[in-house]
Image 1 (cartoon, rainbow over the protein chains, first blue to last red):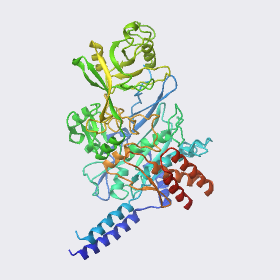
Image 2 (image 1 turned 90 degrees about the vertical axis):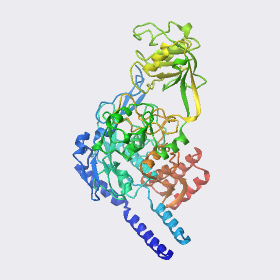
Image 3 (image 1 turned 30 degrees about the vertical axis):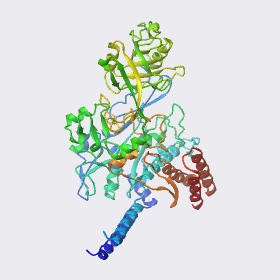
Image 4 (image 1 turned 60 degrees about the horizontal axis):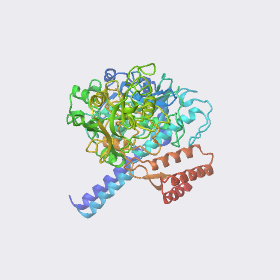
Length: 109
Length: 527
């Protein structure tokens, strides 16, 4: 390939990349409209997440581009807990999404 | 390569860098009218948050957190975060995580490996699952958070911003997709986060282990690290020199031991924590059922005075044990755990009269110390090693024993100092509005691109870094604050005055230079 042809092709590639990147952007209004649509979609709600890994397996699906996806079970999410000691000081801990929260740093015995 | 082509190649690279855009993180309000994010209960504005209802203040914090993370990360695909307040029961603040995970998209750098939805979209350059959230988050409507954005959380309260930033961090990819109690991957597929998780004892990455091996590694406290290059680099910039608790005699038990710290008394240092160890004894009574729990006045004060006391956990508050040791003349205190497990417990409580340093050790380590004679201990600082990292500088992950599903593995270890946002407990020393420590570094290792530029206001360059290698996000804070004031200021004059006062605070705190402050205001006046 001659340098001139290489330069030309690179220039075309740059223009294409710029156009593609531009088209990937969305406006604030479009994002808000998409958010509103998601909020109306019951299937997109937090309540629709599977609870266990086994239940999540059943949600597996193929994407348009040939990949695979799974809905994440809430048992793999993190849950923040809180406890207060006898003096009212707050202690925050994190456990799983299903078990009762335990106090990690016990304020007293 | 010929010169013109080289120059054009460079130009393409520069153009690509310029084209990469900050991520748009969009909270999706899933609450019903008059509850949660829509709670119309009147509220007085708090520092940095002008909302006049509880719901408005919550929405402002959620959007501020979205703008902070969105400034730091690069993506051309919006990230939608389901956001909801619910009554979650006593002692539960909230929960969050990725809504979906993806594998085997052609753009993914590692195949047969799960990627969190937001990262998957960023890598693919398209929304892989339109119409659904990328992250789910819900928080307790029963708990009173601090909704201020100034980083000055009042004692006893919890910053909602810190909590949201922490949980968004999980949702963005600071998370594995494994059941650590069994070692099983979700759908038998490893995740990109876990490809960096390494066990120093076995010399294996988690992705190289069988399920039983991974189950065992998940409780190998202190020996599991994150090996990503960016996280290691960030750790070298921010972590303190390592302080070790060392038994120096007798030789049979000499060595370094894991220890926990206390929320009361002075910080343990080599200057205030060394000497011979004496078991403190007291009466077995209503204050505490054993003679070694330190719950009442020591009966061997003469032997304890001038030495490091050791007592057992249990029976009474940690601060009472410390007070009794101090009254007996002890120079420091060791509390031996009374139950199995690692790490040694952090010791809560407050008592401003405590002047001796206190640490905790595990039950077996405590038994070793109590069972030996002539024990000498000291705290020693090693400037060649990092606190909370292994000897190669790789930050440790939280792998307590027993396992804590949903928490194990997906956090930095509590041994890190200073405290990190993604440790398993939120604490008062955090200020996620300005400092994300080595959280962005870890996300970068998993495939995220961090915004390499400066804060922009209406396209105008403020010259203030969005995020630096040490996780300071002053530029991100500038953009989030600018967005907040643009949304909430009554008019342009109020906006400019608000930004000027904000600029003055940043300069006064030494977070930006006066030159950057001038550049910031030059941008503000163009809006």
